[in-house]
Image (cartoon, rainbow over all chains, first blue to last red; front, side, top):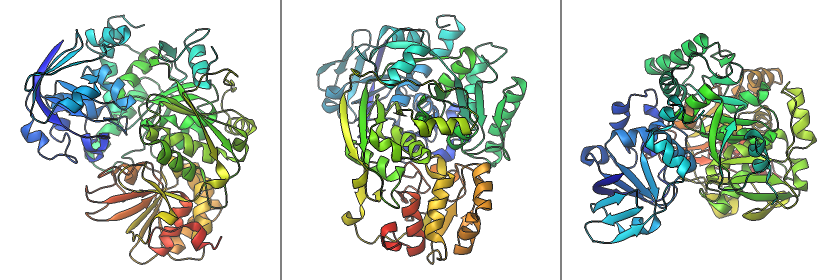
Length: 164
Length: 422
């Protein structure tokens, strides 16, 4: 899997309440959720995000509530990949389960600036900053997780009998 | 190699002799939980699995607590979707308005969780049941859907931090102060992906209410789960609530921990976590006067009977400060009834507080106590993120029921020690 896009950069501890405030949890409509994505942290996000863009963030991205509405809102807003120094665990598994690509890479986060053009080759675990020409190595997903992603998420994996 | 409590529970539920940290397993589930916000997403995903039934209609539960009683039409539609699904699938433990309470206070009270269980819930505070010696953890709606379908979930076996508790809590200091102190010490990602295991001679002085509160906020340190060693207090509790026969998993003598942290309960002071992270924990010697507009006493963290008793003891015969709105929310119908019979509701109402029906309501900025721009609240809830209880420029200070009650009567963030002359 390869992803390429411009970077929107955030700091540490971006919580699910700012990713999608609870006042919008009375719906599970993807487009509606996307229209409020990041609203309490960055009101400009929804106006400037482009299909394929990449979010980079610091430690503990997605901390807080278990609301799957958070990765859904990010994915539905067009973000192709989130690179963070670390992820909160429920957000991490929710992203895998719904098929939002995420990767931990502290070096890449430190070396990438807002607006940089970035390419991520997840098969080989390489993140390239096309703006600066720098490359960063990442850990590949464990095989079990890779299987879920390859099958388009957990639901498909079960529907197709891969997980029983 | 020895296993931790969590690892032993996971091994047994995965049908394995032993597991080690980092291993990916598929574990059998004893209970799958959802609420009115997360279940609708799960129900939609469940429909894609082409399963006519849930894996076990006695092991799925839905609690209408977040935006219930329905705060608007959309919330009403979400509750209806859950109600219809549970009716059609004959889900036994569906809790609607009138029967419901805040999920994590309700499930232990109803005896739906016992020691040694594996529980997943599409709510991050599902880690609460670790107080009973269960492995319980928050997941998303897709995990909930798959759990409802096949009764299993995938887990990466966590490593653990051991908290060795000694001493005994002082008057007006409770589990909330302990967990805020710990999060202040290790940070909001201090236990990321890991278990927090609580043990030591100090356990015997912690009530089940304290333990439920501490385990509840394990997620605020990033933990996968928080779990307490089972003792007589646990066994008495599960028996009194008619839960299934407990299974006790004790950590091996040679269990490997990433870290061992000693906590002397006797040294814990009333603690307040400042905006906008639970890790911003301070004791009263570290700040001056901070005026407030609202107090919330309730939530899955601190809406239990003991919490209301502690608050009522401080508010009895006192008036809520002028211009401070005080909202008390018993976490379940049973707690509401007990509080009424014990005269606590009378104390709250006579002091100028309002008593609400059970709901998560204001904790997540849903309804029943939203903050305006620039307003400040002291809350016994669990998160103080930006905009959590309302406007992005409002502030939430996390504290115990005793601190919240003391603050309610003074109008500024106050120590119960000061108000009660301890």
